[in-house]
Image (cartoon, rainbow, N blue to C red; front, top):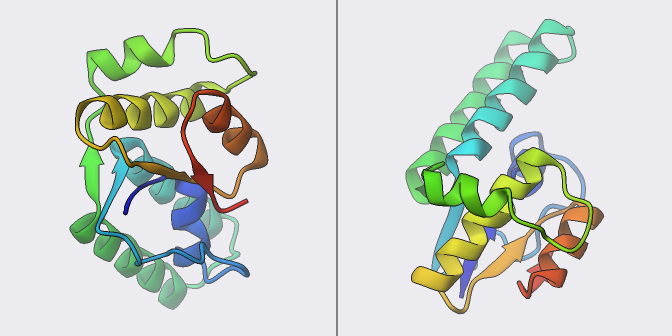
Length: 138
């Protein structure tokens, strides 16, 4: 099975939080947006600056992110993605979430009809479902 991973699924694994995606690593292919790399780096930096993560933890988080970057195919934030993100989605969707959804939709249409959208965000899952993407993680 092919999975599109939004940043919430990645961060739970990176930070060792409770209830990570049960399907984590059980895919034939995994995809995410280049946006996930940025969002993850920003989250790690926020923890570092707030003093909520010590240097050793930051290094561990960065190492887990590097592993993610090696094994997950990253979708470019291209003009078609941005165009699709700006179209109506049927439910309220924040801008960065729209970029994830648009990336998954275009990927599904062009290369991966069996794509499953993985998220721990209930609103994101609702939006994905409204757009016809099967979801896991909530």
